[in-house]
Image 1 (cartoon, one colour):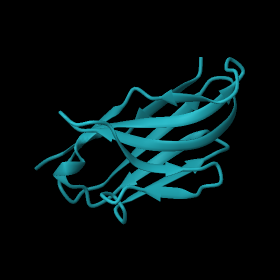
Image 2 (tube, one colour):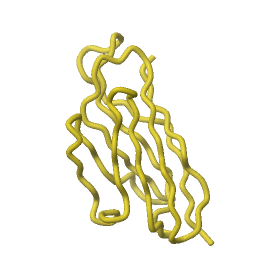
Image 3 (tube, one colour):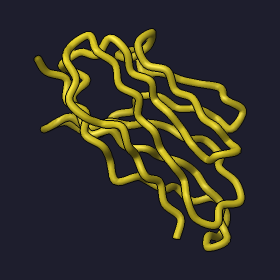
Length: 121
């Protein structure tokens, strides 16, 4: 079964840092674009950052200059380094990827289960 699993969330004080990880597993042949999304309480899910298989990146204006997305294609891992965290960054962070695997017909979109990030003093 193809899946994405996030880790690294937790409680951090304003101005602090966290690094989220996303691990892909299953009989995966190829991973295309990947990204991080977040959903704050009472709000819709929003895009945080994306990264292509060639490591081209895109960031939402709200996190530009503070967050860095990266990936290790050989290990099927993706990361989100979050610095200078603000209370408004509090949300459940979700990993997303377009994957092709032995059990899929072409590329399919897969979501992780989410990891909670709380920024509070």
